[in-house]
Length: 496
Image (cartoon, rainbow, N blue to C red; front, side, top):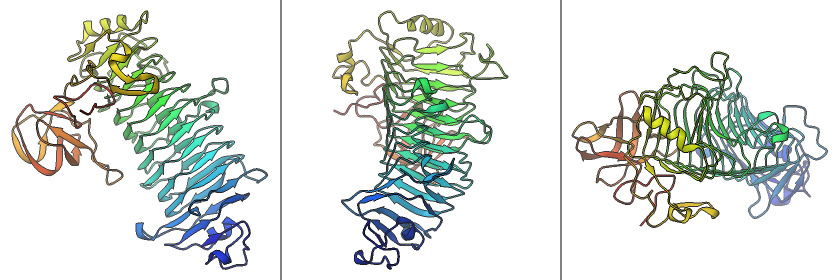
């Protein structure tokens, strides 16, 4: 199906010479397996798609003509409040790609009403009066992928998954920047503070998130996952680069089975845990450089109080193998230093600390270690150039000879001798198995074995099921794959 600025909606749309004039005319005609090709040009329309493909081989695809850019422009278009310039409602197996969406008075794109198996790829969404892209009211496992796009200069969020109670969302490989975040909206946000708005099985990875947040407008955070649902579980925040004038990288309220790893955070952002507990959650192998704090703990409302009770248990949260370098303030900003700091509440291990001159972080660390010593930590006075290849260019690969190289303790260890595909470990929380095919499962390394892909992770039994058999001995180290004698501390593993 073809659409072109010089087309005619009376045409069939079946050939380039018989192109339709409006995109909506094409959306009203596409069937499962069709591709709607839109020639370059500017289209002033409000669009709705409610048709579906049938499976992965018979998707509906909506995209610009190859080598051209179709622009959906909301200037002068009537877009009612809380709606969008482009809405996918109740659709299944639909791909929207390679379009520019701009100047919507409200949201740019909305995905609504139990839509599933949607791919939003290589989209450029900007200067909208609401958010760039919003997923809302998805009650079934959604399998929505928002990939390789650019979302900027929107009034609220760049990308927002709100009330996605069915879960299964991937936000990956995007550039999200200069969104204002008015009224405390976040650049990338899953859930909001209201009850019933959280989600589960959400992946936010390999995005560049920068220069968001207009403080005067009440701007929110860089990345925020949370809400007030009992089912807020299985979050992976991985490989993101966050810098500039952002808010926080945050888990909010009673999140379970959540991993924050391999992120590189610098500038105004830092990691925030809004309100405990965080059972089976981990913050591992991140690099934080010249941030305001490292990890802030204890902000939020618990029992109506802004500061949590002194003896609250954080549920076994693990903070391991991170680099905290040259931060302006505290490495751990603990709003009540009387928190339960026993290992079954909060565990620190293998972190590297390079404190800035005059920063107060050392006092809190000494105070923490006096109650709960941290095994394997590195406290260094190395210069920036001795830590990283090029911190000014945000290349946080460990420099040759860096104290981070081969210095990370294993994330966990095997608990018994064995061979086969099912490996018992002390703690399986650090790994993910792809969550029912949502994404590719982790590869892990066990002792001197070559890395192997995971087939399943059982967090309750602390077992890892592999895709191929191996042999191991009790106490073998288990971590994400490494290149040297042991894993490196921080977000980037240096290759030889």
